[in-house]
Image 1 (cartoon, rainbow, N blue to C red):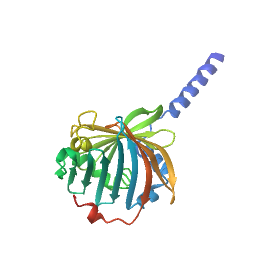
Image 2 (spheres, rainbow, N blue to C red; image 1 turned 180 degrees about the vertical axis):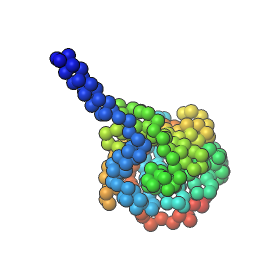
Image 3 (cartoon, rainbow, N blue to C red; image 1 turned 30 degrees about the horizontal axis):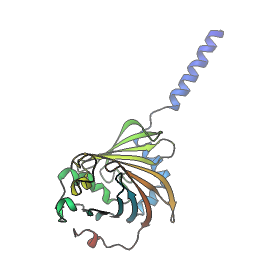
Length: 252
């Protein structure tokens, strides 16, 4: 009788442990992320997003970054280096880039670059209304980012591109995003990229120091670019400001 009771207690403990480590579904992980970011409705309300930041590269070069996202219209990134200005423009149909490596002329992106950069147009991110956007999700196990355990979530886009997001188990924040083909800056400033800037190479970006801004929006204030090994300190964020998507979408 005593032995049976011990076995019964052990089985109950084991079942409780298994339940505690039950694998999360992709939908549950996304729900946790949406809650962490202030809720689905808040992210849906972002029509345009402007971000300004400053970074210092490994070689001591200061970089000033400006990015604009306008829902379903355009993504524009301007990076000022000592060697010149790098510009990336992505619309729903096409993408271009210019910089010292192109002689300042705008060149069309490779197919892989365009596919990987296209989701950047969405200021709310690909996990908001993912099904309506045609994005498909798949759990890809676990990850660890700077000591923090994360869920790995694969997102497949209608274009054929795929990205992997590492989402903090505790906070629900995205700590790392990686994708293939977005290595644009390395091709338009070949001397800046540590890996030679292959246009279809893997790109990894880490996010940290999340803060709440007026309006209840939550954003990371430190962005680490794996390509350059630089940490971008965000200096300014503007949600739904006065922007002209037609001007931003012109490669100039």
